[in-house]
Amino acid sequence: MVRTIVAWYADVFRKNSGMIRCLVRMIDVEETFAELWNRRNREIADRIVSFLVSFLGIDAKDRGPLRELVNALGDGMD
Image (cartoon, rainbow, N blue to C red; front, side, top):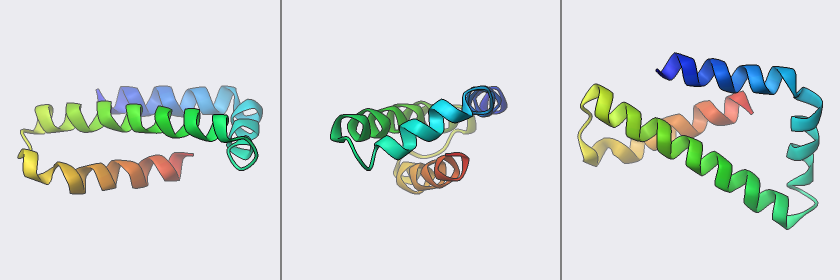
């Protein structure tokens, strides 16, 4: 499941690199774009963390560090 999500994410960026690059640059210029981009990132990270907690049987108290890891990996993809 995680590989499927990452593959989809990478494929979307690859196929739409110009548009994604423009959107990423817009977050510094337009507050609305920044809000949308950040909300999108949070929603994706929330889904991945929830899946990993369930799939790997991770204790809820470890959710914070897991979230930081997912965020760091997402930043690397962006």
